Length: 319
Image (tube, rainbow, N blue to C red; front, top):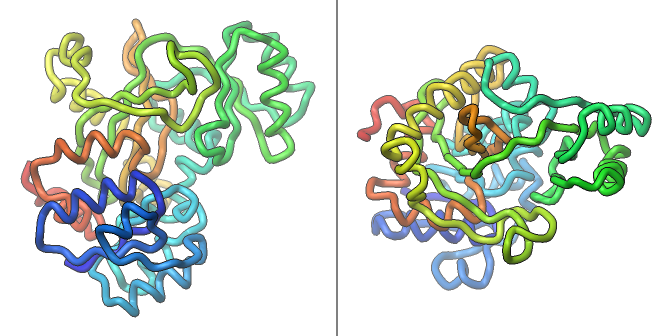
């Protein structure tokens, strides 16, 4: 296969490394970095310009486009590539709102009866103060839109919660969420819009400093497998089956019902509470840094899985 990977980070390098490991693909990277350039051809392009990406894919006669970062997905790059008749692993602009808007994601979860924390959406300072004081700490404050993993604050400091929310109120609504306690875990699902196939769980480290101190980040490292999941659920498969049944499949069904079939990678950010598994957030693409520890564990063909997702053939894919 000739494959175009879009992105500039370690996540994209991990995807490219997994594809090259199969030994039968020509890979081009739109963006890239020094490490990626040592492995494959890189092309510099505006990753948010949907028409330019589609033109590059057509000019290079690629079989599949794999979109790594969230920003091009939210900008509708996958739509332009599909309109050009090229297979693309990545959701449409409408479906990518599952990551691009936290309030949209919460509404989808509510409609699909997916287990998640309670939330109050606020649009101004008075509503914010009322929500913060009405709920009590610890507080979980989330910006509605993309914030590169830095839009979330978990704090027991009321003033810090309000100050964090104020930074984002001018850009859109802010969510004041129920605080959930327990270990966090990430689980990726391939989707072709109907069929949903899980990969394997990973746990990342969100806080900036040692000892879970400092502000939230997009992830400071990750590991897989997660021994505590086997201890608690009996096996990785038991865990992934439960999340597929209660979280991923209902979400994918609901997106299809509203005319936004999800084709690509649904990232479920989960927390295992005493009351059961709850969704913290969804992302619409491979997660960074989890991808770097999940893909090396993959024993089947990544290219086949991505192409099956892009072309509606996941149900035919061997386990």
